[in-house]
Image 1 (cartoon, rainbow, N blue to C red):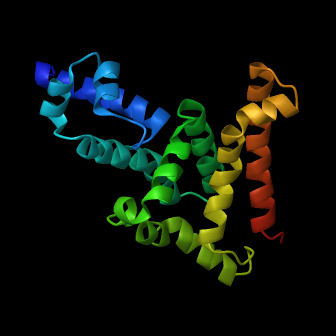
Image 2: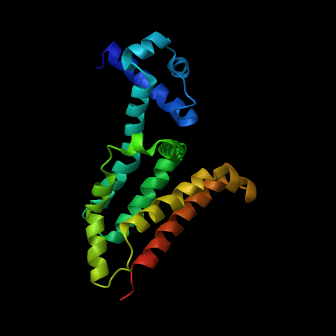
Image 3: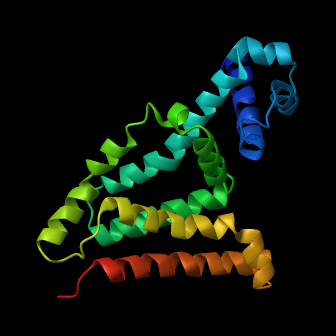
Length: 204
């Protein structure tokens, strides 16, 4: 069982995550976090010392949530078509659960890329995945169209992410209820899988 201090830390961390996702780093104050956690500022600062320290912990956790599942899928010993389907599915489910996640990550990186990306090894992780190896081998064998991971990965992710980024606009333009949007999202997700695979995989 967790001790009282661990429970307090978790409570502050979860509160900070909700506030940072909604307001970003610049728009969030220590008072906002303390209020969300239902604690006083002194106690919040006692556990995390500063807003900056707490933000970096939350940001790194969210970056891990965003990328690690994708990297794990890319390294699975499964065929490339199934792999693409799983990456699209993973992103779709993640965006349903945390629709503000991608806005938060992109906004913060846009403001301070040097500070937030300096320690990431994502490029090397992605280039060394089994998926990238399968891509190279498939292209050389003439089974796949020539495309680099730098192009295909954004296709797998952004086609789903934009659906949620523009959800309100989409519902207004096409006069969709929540239930209709959810059904549309499921259909759209399957179109994305099919279109990418149909483009990438050459017919024998």
